[in-house]
Image 1: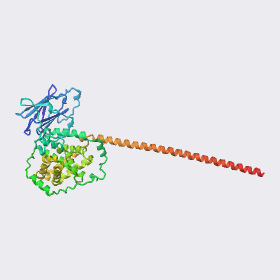
Image 2: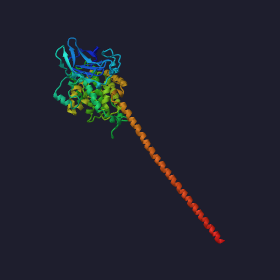
Image 3: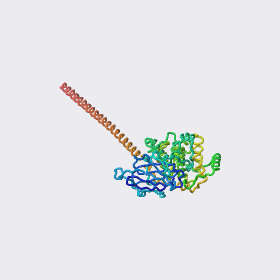
Image 4: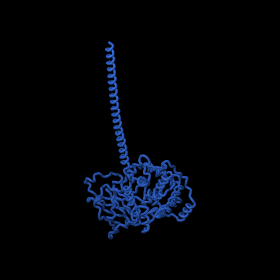
Length: 476
């Protein structure tokens, strides 16, 4: 995906007029997807990603019956969105981003866009409310036709494919959903599935089932990359077809997809001690949104954040430090070269063949091409660069950036632990007071007994004195 330049102007009627370029990469101008937020606007046109940050707030309540104009000669779109009046109270607190306040956003080689992140779930998809008018013709419904798979190179669709994919991934028909919508649906599902209690259980220490070894102590052996005769034969078969899908336009997308799949592989390898189980195909699928949502990434940071969110939501071990350890494993794997990565891709390919039949489609759309890509189209120097990029983004990723409320959950848990400690101490204090009362009563009882003994001694002494006096009187 590429970030292009959008220009705009505001008029006295509180309307925002946008001019959106359609470069030569746009092959199907009818295929669009539009999302609108308070001050964010996202256009996805064919294979081109465009984002606009407005200095005015859009009026999201007035987004019905919108019209998008397309000029096929000048190759640009134009549209008008209503804005909230500037003197309205709701428009007072506008995020001030100096680089974007001029009303335009250029292709951002400095990666400034990542510094102005937004929550996609706060955006509203308005595509269904829009009509497309081409060269002044009759308005038509916007199409949904978006490629998918390795390098976004597949655009096929069949009922059998939809039925099969619904069993192993969450879209069913990726051709009808733009990459932006795939991300939107993925994050919405994660919010629904994330379990606060499960995260609490794994927060203080990894919750390892009884009888299992702690996977944190496992050391990955990157020299374990020997290919069996069947795997070598598979590599030769795959490489017999030339891979012409890689170019300057999709190189970054392909590398991000590779890292996304590799992170899922590293989690499975560590959690199973590199002894795949019947759950391994599911683990490698669900933790990779490339495989489970056919998601497209254009930066490594988003890849890592996605993996961390999913690893804290779905698998057995939902511990932040454990997930970061899996990222470290991926960094080490990329630094060690291609052999171990190719081996694990072959293992994944075999898993998808022998398990659920529907996962064979994931081999077709992703794993097979990635085996060819890593085997023949990248060298170890390129993988080292990817490892360094992956390592660098870790410094910018925090628990807060995952948008799961992790710090709030941890604060809540610590408060609960402190309250439990205080309650146990107070209950212990009550028992000690009760023991002291018993000791005090026992002491009083002992004192009473001693007094009784003394009285008895006095009585016996007085009686002895009386007897002696009586004897003396008799003698007299």
